Image 1: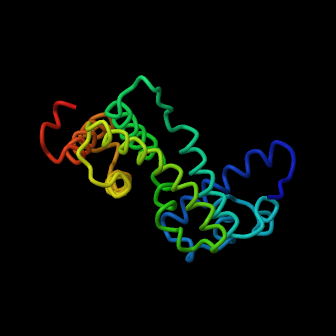
Image 2: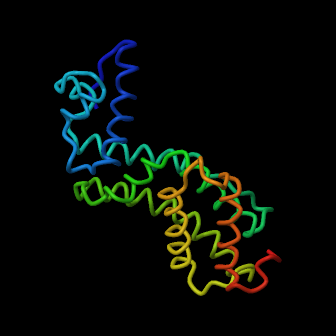
Length: 202
C-alpha cells in the first residue's frame, strides 16, 4: 500500500480506515464509493490512492487487520490449566474484544462475499486459525471428559456463531454491563458443552 510521509499522512490513514469501516458497516461495501469515503475524511478523492490501490484493497486490509489483531490478543493457555479454564478465558476474551469493535465485526462476517477469491482465501485461513483455537480447547475437554461434545469442530461453529451475534445487539447504554454479558454467555456455553447437565460444576 502506497503511503505519503510526514505527520499529515500519519493522521490521514487512520481516519480513512475508520471512516471506511463506519461507512461499509452502515451502508454496505457495494453502496459506498471512494469519493464518499474521501468526503467523510475531508480530502480529495484522488488523495485516497496514496494510501490504498482501490476499494477492494481497502476492504481486504480492514478485514485482515481485524483478524491479525484478534489472533494477536487471543490469550495463550498454559499446560497446567484445564480445558474448562481455557474455554472460559476464550469466551470472555471473544466478547470483550468484539464489543469494542462492532463495525469491524460486522464487516468481518457480512462483507466476506465482496472479497476477491484470493483475498477471501486469505481471510478464511485466518478465521480458521482462530476457530481452531476453540476447537482444540473443546477437543481436549472431550478427551478428558470435561465436556460432553460429540464433535469438537461442530461445537466450535455453534459457539462462535452464538458469540458473534452479541456484537450486533449489545449497547453500552443498555441495562447489562459487558462483564454481566460475559458471565451470561459463559453460563450458556457451559450448558452447551455439558448438555445442560451439571453445568454449574465446571
